[in-house]
Length: 172
Image (cartoon, rainbow, N blue to C red; front, top):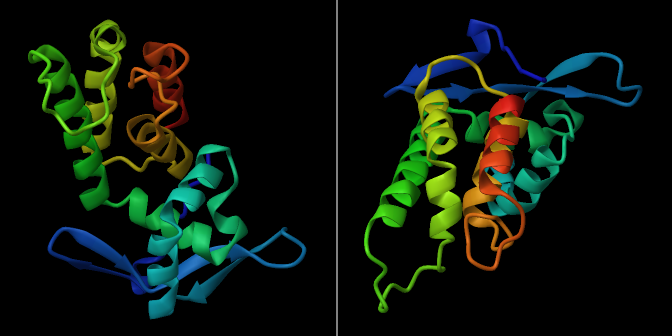
């Protein structure tokens, strides 16, 4: 698991959101980490390329391997994004318990998979709400399960949702 602890001198807190002014990245040899000052364009580029960066993080690429991955990792493991992701898991579980609406514009969900994974879904939402550091890989995996059409959470998805959520939890 890769975590990016930064010294307090390069992190500020505003409204429960940590804002980093530097990220740790590996340069050239890949043996040592260097703190690079963030530019405004780094956050914008990381947001624009969010889905592809999340895919790379979920696949196990280390956040410190590039400035954009480091910025994205900071963003998705931050308190605000973790709360949003926990709420999305709660909403998925609640949606599976409600009767299906023929006029729902959202992607059809795999209700039986969600019901079978109810305990794991509750655990992932609870872990996301904790204050402990989480790996970017685990958070990216949990995000992908909610945003990728091939996820077992959706009707056209493949695999077993409980096992996939358990895998994301183990990576956190």
